[in-house]
Image (tube, rainbow, N blue to C red; front, top):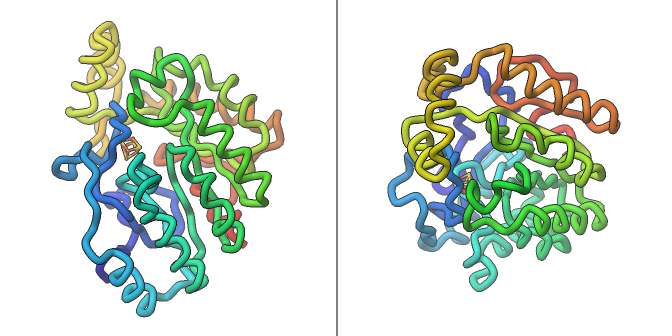
Length: 279
Ligand code: SF4
């Protein structure tokens, strides 16, 4: 395999994703999210094109067992602003449609709605991240505004495409009080997946440099009372449970399935990443 790889959740025992492949049409991401978990990739915040991508993708598609879905993308966004000009992701989706791929799209961009025509011809589900409204410009400085992402989700849903809201991550003191508002504005989605912020050294530095009053609070919540799991710091279990239950309860009230991402708590939804919506 060359450009399509087995999905690798960094060997996390807490990952509940079903078996799937991972495909990133671009290297790096311009959205600049402070909490990003993929910044181990060199020069991460600049987007690069991949050489001969379509040829390489087709070679992989010919060789793979396509009963497993492909997730696009897990360590970049398939819809950076330059996608409007290059249309690379669109060409990749066209090719994957021709090979009968089951596709899980994960994005933070409203550009995805442009491809509703092709996506509606495939077994596909689109996950869009919306973390909140008040801090979006600080947390996700170059990503399209959350209102535009919600509009895009609505367009996709109206085109008959299953849509997942990624309410992820939830950051203490920042967006935990906006959870209900986000869910109410996205009340048309098919599924919700949520998680609390996991901190690494670099994301901690980015977050507290943009929001200095969080520094002491996060030092306490994560490094004093939290727990290190592999390379990330988690909040204390009772605090995570309290935050996540609030999302779950609101989803229950709205009749929407809800799952947690890498939290280690059980959930009733048939999958976390929306694979159950692919049939
Ligand atoms: S959109 Fe995703 S990959 Fe891009 S910077 Fe934000 S969290 Fe990282």
